[in-house]
Length: 111
Image (tube, rainbow, N blue to C red; front, side, top):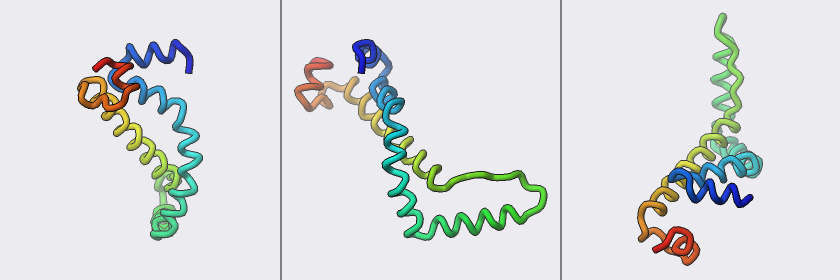
């Protein structure tokens, strides 16, 4: 993180830190989450059901090709959710001094 990054986060919108972390951490998070998501989808039978549905879909004449990876989709949506709620919490911390519960947050944003 550069000093310019810090300035942009501090002076930026209510979710500036979240946007920064999303840009830096989405790919590593996806790499770590994908095996867990895949195993979970396999355990509950979702991958088999999805493959069955896609097999039926592909057997219908004249339908466009659908190339969708269920594990990738679920992982992407999970990461979207993580950063959505992280952004909401960041905005709350920026707006509400009572949410600044650590010394670092009080020092950064004032009390």
